[in-house]
Structure formats: C-alpha cells, structure tokens
Image (cartoon, rainbow, N blue to C red; front, side, top):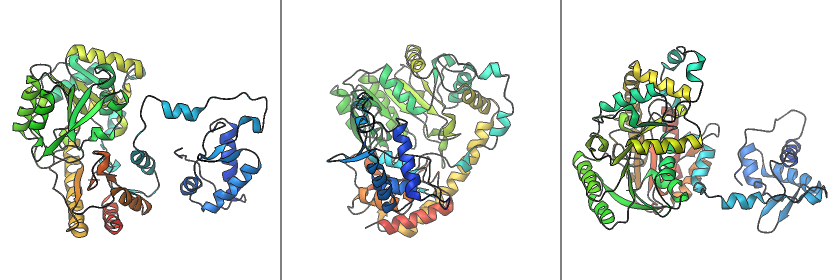
Length: 479
C-alpha cells in the first residue's frame, strides 16, 4: 500500500506524537477509508512521511492493536482487523485488495510511483523532472485571465473536438511548420498523454504491436500494455530511429503502429535528421504503417529548429500528430492536440467525450488567447533564453563532478541530458541512495527495462542552486 497524505502530526501541542498518529489511523479505519482486511502502510513508510522515529509508530501500532483495530498477519504485514472484531452486525465487505490487484489498467512501475510521490516532498531536489520550472511560467498569464469573457462563453462544455477558436489558432500555428490542416482535423485533448490513451482505446485492438524507439518515454507508461498490446523497441543512433530495424519489423508485419518522438527525443534528446525522417515516412508508406508523431518538445529548440515534422511530409493521412502546451506554456493547463484524418478525429472525440466530456474550457480559451495575441512566441523566446543558461550550468556541473565517471552529449533542445556511466553499477541502488540524500533521479531503466547505465537528467525544473547541490550529492552517491 502506497502511503501518501498531506496530514502531519503537530509537535509541541500537548498531545504525544504517537497518540496523534494512532488517532489518525483510527479515523481512517472507522471512516472506511482503510476497510477491514486492507494492509496498513509499513512502520517505516509512515515514519518517513510523518518525519518521526520508527519507535513512535511502533507505540501507535501497539495502542491500535490493543484496541482490536489492527493485527499482524503472516506474509501480509499489518492489516485492519476483520469487522467482526468490533461489531458482529457488520456484514463481510468486499476484498478491495483483490480488486486493486486485478484491475485492467496496470500499475505504474514501482520507481515511477516512488517518483510521483517524492516530487512533493518538501525541499526535494528534482533532477529528472520533465516539466518547466514555475519560474518559466508565462508572466502574461494574469493579463490574459483579466480578459475573461462573459461566464456563458467559457464555463460550459465545449464541443467534442474542442473550442473552435483554439482549433483555428492551432491550425495557423502548425502552418508555420509546414503542416496545413483545417480546424476540422484538430482534436483538443487534456495533454499528450490523453492522446495516447484515446488512440489505444479508440483505434487499436487487443494484440496490437506498437513500434517505438528504445529507449523511449512510451516504455515508462502502461497505456498500451494495459490495453493488451505489446511494445517493440527499435534502436537509436545519432540520426534517430534505426531505419533498417523499422523495415525489418514493418516488413514482417510485426508492427501495427509506429510511435516516435523525432524532435528532442525523450529521454535521449536526439533530433531525427531530415533524411531519416524522409526514410521513416517512406517506409511507413510502403508498409501502410500508421505513425504517431509526438512533437511535444518541438518549440524548445535552443541552438536551431529541428527539421519539419513528419506530418509535413504527409499527403496520405498516415501521420497522427500530437502537440502539447505542457512543456512550453504550463503543465497545469492540460492542453494538447491531435491532428489526423477527420474520421479518426471524430472517433477519438467520441471516446474522449465518454471519458471526460472535454478538456477545460477555461484552459482552452487561455491558450487560444496566447496564440491569437502573439504572446506565445514572446514567451518561447524567454523560455529558450532561460533554458540555454540552465543547460550551460548543468553541463558545467557535470564536467566538474562527473568527468571521467560518465559521458553525455550536449542536447540541442528540449529538457534532457542522457547521461551514461562508464562502468556498470546498480542504478536501482543509486536511485535509492540519492533519494535518501534528498535528490530525485530518473533512472534509464524506466525507458528501457534492460538499461543499467543511464540517467535522464533535466535542467528545466531545479533552480541553479538546487542543480549545484543535487549534482554534488549525486556524485557522492555513486558507489
């Protein structure tokens, strides 16, 4: 049982810490939040979250055990006692633990669950976080929000494909990248991740095989695997996805769809060359293999723009293009988009309406205004300037602390440095040691389960001071 809560015991209020914690657990049990038969978080986990000694938790558990609320069970740790222990009239309840274990959607990898939890620990240094620092959020946001139209215009449900004014602005925006598409073929989604979920549920069948780069961000998700699909990794080189490997799998009929991040790839930062893009597109045309192009990092070029999108080559309706504002404008807006053939967009819109009835209308209106008023371009100039400085500083720190121990390539854009250790070591152990020292990392095995040599470092989130402290602690944590 993963333990997450915003509650904390209050020190020096006259009530012992163990008693406050016992009362907290008692309230959880009596309210049904922790039903009979469910496992209690470990003493260690609770002590870590509450910032107390483990002996304090032992004392609280002893009181709860004496009250008949919890009990130790061989092989299962500590569980909430059966309802009959305190009320014989209470009927036997469902075994929620069994439901949790058998749900169709697979759980995140344990390390990703740990990361999702640890990101909100006070004072944690986040060296792998794939999002912009709050310092990079647009200063014009307040100005835009002061321009809110009458309530009836933005607080109702949008049409299935999203607000027309935003789809119109995205159509104009994409024309700048050589993608000429009408608003009718644009679907607004709640971030790029939802686009993947809609495609998995709305277009593919159980048993499909998704081809993607290896390593890949997609490997860190359970979207396609939970829908009964398999993942096939294709090797990367300095020009991007290996075209020969793609032809091997596509030609043998082993791929149902290709997913790629051609611009500032996550996690490696690789930019697919123009020639490679042309080769990949032509191979997919030859074998009638649909492409999902995830272009969330396109606008984050730092040295020079990446080559035009694969979608700009597409005259066959082969490419489903995924864009997002989460990496550039704000992750909290939850605005992304899919571009594709109209019948595909209508299908995905129908599935989306069945799941959330549309992305936030307020967020859609806000992004439309940023694009319409030319503020998005101004904001990108600021973000690129800041990211260049952050990239330079992290590279300087790596050269000082890890030269000779690891190697890396300076990324031309995006957020990430793909760091490779020159000798074998336990990345799992390094992750744990760094976390204990207050530094949160993204290990390479999240993106390729066989990888034991890489870290994905991000210069987009941590402050300059945090980067300095964090890289120093990372170097100290290396065995």
